[in-house]
Amino acid sequence: MNMNMNMNMNINNYSFPVYDKNNWDNTLKETELFKEVPYLSARLGDQAYEYSKDGDISNYHLSIQYIMGVLADQAKGKVDLSHFSSEEALSSHVSLEENEHNYHCFNQHASTVYHINNHDFGRTLVDLFEQMNNSGKNVLALKIDSSQHSMAARLYIKNTEQGQGQERRFVINFYDPNLTDKTVRCEVDDALKLNDYSLRNFISNQTYLSSYVDAEISSIIVCDKADIRDEHKVKENRALTPLSQSSPLPLSAARLDLLLTDNFAVGIQKMAEEVKNLSESDRKMFFNQLLQPRAENDISGLQCAFNYQCFDALEAYSELLVLAPPEQRTDLLTAKSENGWSNLARAISSGNKDMVDVCFYLLQWLPLDEVNELVFPLAESLPLNDMCTLWEQYTDFMQQQSNSLIKDAEIYAQQSAAVTPASA
Image (tube, rainbow, N blue to C red; front, side, top):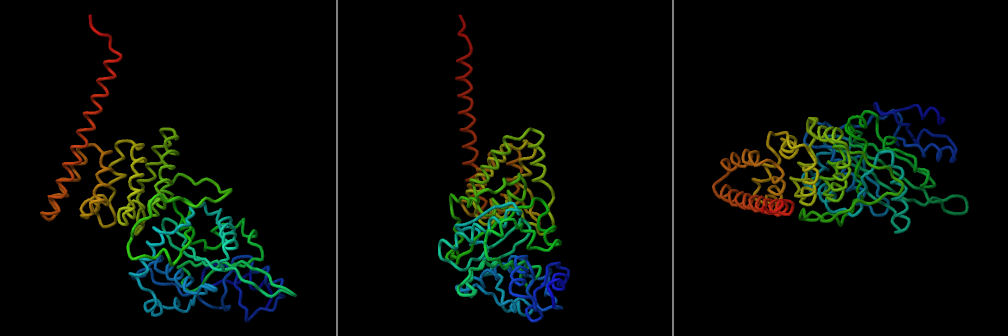
């Protein structure tokens, strides 16, 4: 079977070229050239299993399961995809609770995290393979997220016999849970050949369009077993990993979602500086974008930050709030989640003192009557002990607001006295 016939094949509706080594008679050089383009490695005529999206298993459960498979094989990072090939196999192999825990551990503890435009994906791969070369690592596991979808990848450096010596080859297996038991693979003899690849080269058109509705940007997290810990203690003062010659990220809800979810306060502060430099009309347009209705099951970054106690990111969010028109601030802070609860209200009623402190810190940017409209009904719905605690915190908040007003009044009086001539 020649290369052109294989190039025209596809599995399900995924229009990737298919490599079937059992039906392949091309030369070694032709095979190597074929593999430089992302392809599906499968038997011709195969159908990919696609998991039921109506069940308990979600895309991020599967992406984490793939990552854990890569981390389990330190030599090659090979994953047995037969564990992903049926509903029964998934049920016996995927632990929902454990994978949810690991997902948030990687988000909160990983040391290497890129936020990139998708057309910079190849440049990111080059950067990571260079780091692997320098550190002597052969395998890396990546978690790749948009604000709507979770994917994974295995990076592998392998040595192959070539004539009288060995040749290094750089391998990517890209795992999209929508193609549940297959990966899109790419293999090159020089990592720099990956430089111009976009993330879109590794994903089906259908998945791409549904996963990148707001902006074509992704979070790329290097996963390590050391990041998995018993407690969800969020890493403070996190900085994104820089990528040389990368294009600037757009101001978008998707970018903010990723920064809030991954607890990158500095990134949110940088966004606030960019918003500050916008014209009044462009600034209003940006905040209108943040308030657009979300797709079903699309959890906002703000909700994730409240859920997983990303205190640094939540405090930094206030720098965006103060730039919003006053009439939009309440909606930006108290937007309802899919179950009808305000994320802020749920956080205030959590009983976690640090979380409640952050909530009241954010509330200072809202008009007092709107704060009361939120707090009073909430307090009445709580058990007695929790209600008393909330009233104590509310009293402290009001005292701080009063002190701030008194201080502002004193400053205003001093300034007025300095510019008003003394009466004769």
